Each structure stands twice: as structure tokens, then as C-alpha cells.
Amino acid sequence: MVRLREACAWVIQRSLWLWLGAALLAFLLPEAFASALSILALCVLLACVAGKGYRLPALLLFALLVLFVAGLVSLAITPDPEVTRWPVARLWAGLALSYGLVAWSVLRARPGTLEVTSAAMGVGLALLGALIVRWPGGSKLPFIPKTLYAILPIPAQGIINANMLGGALVALLPLVWASVLWAEGAWRWLKRMLFGVSALVILAVLVLTQTRGALLAALVTLGVLTVARWPRLVFLLWPVALVAGWGIANTGLDAFLSASGADSAISGLSDRVDLWQRALLMLRDFPLTGPGAGLYERLMWALYPPTQLRPGLSSGLHAHNIWLQVGVDFGLPGLFAFVVLTLGSAAWAVRALRLPGQGRALLWGGLGSLLAVALHGMVDAPWMVGRSAFAFWWGLGVLLSAAAVAHAQASVPVDQVESA
Image (cartoon, rainbow, N blue to C red; front, side):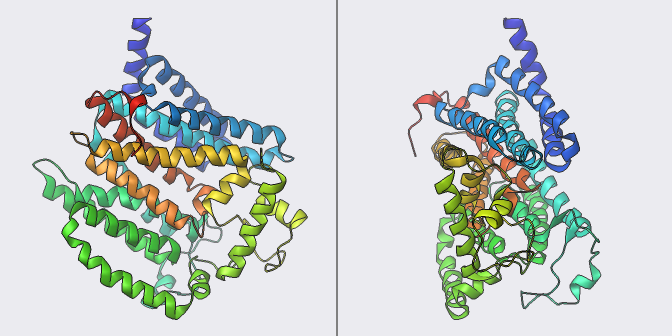
């Protein structure tokens, strides 16, 4: 048994790119999801045998298990398995990726690899966005020339829209910015320069998406991380907050929300309230299981027709709120497990920040990623229903892995970790 565990641990030590590649296949290529999930299931089994994946608090493991079961239940009760299997497959791939990063990190303890990988993914996605994204037709940000979009290639059928790209970039940007702020080692100035350039590229493309909700969440998160690194800079946030508040007050909340997305299918507070009310009605009628993952739009038009939107105005509608979207897809048990997983991970990471050791950039970056997703998720949730959901699960996995390594190095029993 000892040799079997050692063999499994040897495989897990060299499995980072296998986890990453299989998860990307499950998120990006629907036709390859079965093979990708099989690879991820095998990796999870090897991690369980190796025993290192269990360096998570029992509450977080329970939340992961409940979300997995919620996916099974959604597949069992859905009236359209062909539609539901895609969001369920992405959920399972995300859970496996987060779990696998913990198993790999505890064995390898190489934070630099995760920092570089996060930056490479962010820059790669930002540059690839110029080729695969349906850019917005006009300019909702006054400082962006309308002629700029004429230079960018606009594919006939973009793989993802600008909202989804913005939702993915806002989850990856804090990971890169934290690597700038908490660079360590003899080459820290070179690291800050390289990660800083990467962060600027990601931020520039995020601005081009014109997803104001994501951009506002990114700016708030970057400000929080900067102040966390250098608390004396807190006085600089007051002018920014005053200007932002003045702008929203003069523009009006409804007008601000009308421009928080890159497309014009959903505009203003009234449209979002209408979608939120439909989601609450679905949760009322399907509290335990939800109606089936991925069926929000179809069920809305069939049973809960909105008062603000007209049929055929848009396709791919969702709840425009992260918490409501999870609840509709996987029921109240799935929503409860998702809340426990996110808040519990944040609390565990905050506790890890009090421990000695390296990995500060990953801990703060992971916390920043969760904060940015939560802020953006109050008015939108494009990453939760599409291919860009990968960015959220990567950020969560990085946070959990950094916290697991910190607790392991400090020899703290994780089941006894106090709530932060």
C-alpha cells in the first residue's frame, strides 16, 4: 500500500499540465468533454490514493462533494440532457481542477510555476480575444475611439462574446497583479516588470471589451490589493471613490447598469431586476434541484415570461447574478455548497496569511480573484454559463493550493483551522 501511494504521488507531482490540459478541453471543446472528464477522474483517484489531496478542511471537501452530487441530480431531473450536460461537465471539470491543484501544490510547493501559468493564461486569452471575440459595435467608453474597433479583426461567428472575455479576464487579472506587488527573490524587480507588462496587456483588452461591470470590479480589486501591500496608499483611494461615486450619481444607477455590459440586449436596472425575479420564481418552484442546468432562458420564456424583454431580442440569456445563476442551475443545496466553498476558501486563505512562509502572491491573488468575481457577479455572470468559467475555477484552485501549502508547511491541522 505504501508503494502504491508513493507511485501515485510520483504521478501527481508531474501531472499539473495533465490537469490543466484536460480541464481546458472540457471547457472549450464540447465534443471532447467525455475524454477530458475521464482523465480528470483518473487524476482525482490518483490524488485520493496518494492522500495529499485531503489537505483541505473537511467543510470545503464536503462543499466540493455536494456540488458534484448537485451536478448528478441536475442531469437526472433535466428535461433536456443534451443542454444540461455541458454546464454540468464544466462544473465537474472545475471541481477536479481545483482539487488537483491542491494535490499537486502540496507535493511540489512551487508557487512560481502557478504565478507564471496564471500570467501566461491571462495574456494568452487577452491576445487570443482579438481573434475570437465578437467586439462591441459602438463605444460606450468616451476615451475609446470608435475607429479603433475597425482595426481589430471581427470574426463572422465569434467563439465568445466580449462579456464572457471580460468575465474571464477580471478573474485572472488579480492573480497577475498580486505577483507584481508581492514579488520575491533576487530577481524580484525583473519579475515585477514582466508581470506588470502582463497585467497591463490584460487590463487593456478588458477595457476594449467595454464591460463596465467587469472593469469596475477589476479597478476596485486592484486598489484593494495595492492598499493591502502598501497600507499608506489608502489615502489615494478616497479621491478615486469620490470621483466614481460622483459619476454614478450624475449618470444614474440605471444608466450605469445599462452600460455595464458590452452588448445592448440587457440594459438598465429594470431589465436586470426582471431577470432576477424570474430566477427567484424558478428557485421558488424548483428549490431542491433547480429546473436543470442551462435551461434558464428556455424556462423563462415558457413559464415566467419577463415584462421588460421581448422574445427573440437576445439569445443565451442568464440570471445576470452569480448566486442566482448557481441556484437556478443546481438548486438551493448547490447554491449553499457554492457559498460555503467560496467563503470558506477565502477564510482559510486569510488564516494562511497569518502563517510564515512564501506564497503571499498566490494567496492575495486568489483572494483578489474571488473578490473581483463576486463584485462583477452582482450584475452579471457570463463566466458561469460559458467557456470562460475556467478562469474562476483556476483562481479558486490557486487560492486553495496556496493555502494548503502554507498550512502544510506550518504543520497546522487543517480541520482545526479557525474561521477568519
